Length: 235
Image (tube, rainbow, N blue to C red):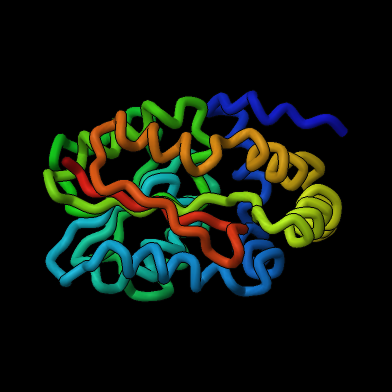
């Protein structure tokens, strides 16, 4: 089945993630062999939270970052997939965090947040799904106060030749098969490797962040470059 990774209209992407929302967390843990929690922890640690901050989690999905960022005073999670947010809300309630975590439906390219209103911003595996990621980066810079920190996790491709070959085989063939078998969705887990392949390489994405208004931009490869942690400070 051919998957158009370039079609990232809000309705299509939201519908795709809504379809897999009930099994999304399970598949994340299975397909990453449980390493996804460590990736999120690394991103949160890079924000250097002190307990006084308001954290904005863009493309919040099922609220994993919101619930893991316990050092933040307040977390606002934004996503345009209603079923994903519904799963996240159940998790927030089960954790007794409704006073600290708020989930809002919205678009990354037009964040429903005031200018310089938050202290930190995160995106975990969502920026590649945005139709205009450069506009989302500008929006994240807008809502951050000067000196506020950004942390973005996104999939990459390992550069070591042997590992790269093995990873691409897993990503293109085995991962979609497991995803379809568990979720029952024929599209979402074929879209995933296609979308990663179409995302800008680290050097290009760092340039996008700099143009958006971020300084001290960095890209740290995690787990041999399977994932990259992008960081920056609002200038």
